[in-house]
Image 1 (cartoon, rainbow, N blue to C red):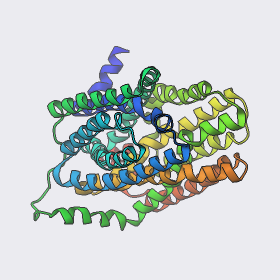
Image 2 (tube, helix red, strand yellow; image 1 turned 45 degrees about the horizontal axis):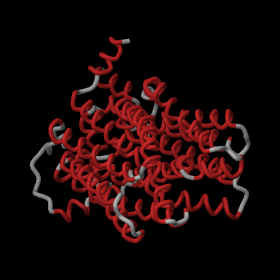
Image 3 (cartoon, helix red, strand yellow; image 1 turned 120 degrees about the horizontal axis):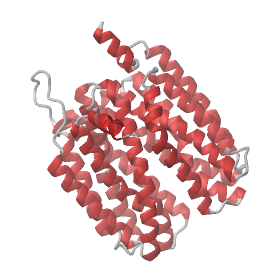
Image 4 (cartoon, helix red, strand yellow; image 1 turned 120 degrees about the vertical axis):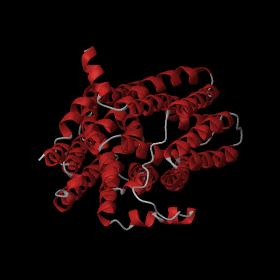
Length: 416
């Protein structure tokens, strides 16, 4: 066991493990607060879920803008500084949001924080792609998935205890953890931005930002983004609609919903490495279609089953799709990107999460309020079928290109 862990450690450069360790600490801080954010807002300011939902949606819009700017900055100035900036903003937000007593102040500050703190997202993903060679990226992003899920097991557990005493402790703890992470990044993490292979004229800030038009005019990449948005629209229902559905339709207590969600985290921790070792042998667009297939089965099941064990079984099926699709989608986004535009492409890739978070809960709410709630899962199944067809079409169109072929094929070509 020890030898296997040592071999795994030696397969990745030390810088990757620094990124992984700081990410683990940071995610613990985020998950201390994130699951309780809507609960805090509704309880502290005596507003309903409609107001809380609007707050979360506008925060996502602000995050999309911040991510766009951050991606451009990371491609021009480097990854490390942008990541430090995001951590410092996160620390300061914890020291301010927890003390605000007026909802309109909290609302404005939350949107402002979302704008600034999201700048680090594309820089972080670009840094991982910088560090790892193409044949190791699937494993690397899979490793980050396991690390995030470990943090998801720890963070909400601690957050629940802190929230029982005072919600302010959540904000303060997040601020302390973000500060610790920033110090570690400052001391241990080097810059990873690739150096230009040839000298080029100095680019203005406006030219850097306008460089997004390359990604936005990359039609195959936009097709990939569109298919991913459809897939994530369905996936994100597990974090928004599912808890309300299980409570109102099947009278499932919140503690059992927690057990269902924990099933997902435990499955990732136990099996992500094994799954990653399998999927890297197959064409990535086909793996995205397979991931969408598992989502289709798992989410559609919620419209037909009615017991907690079957709800947990459906979550395991969904998590299999998650373990296949999440690392593969990050690898594909990095593969599409020219080296000097990697962070900007990653920022556009962030739309696959931002767009669903803006419209998914609202659209599901319309179905819940006006139709049979089970239709949420039936419609989700149909969206997954469309995503499957789109990913398969991308495989037919782009799968023969070297940068989209499985790692073993590239290694065989290089050794021939």
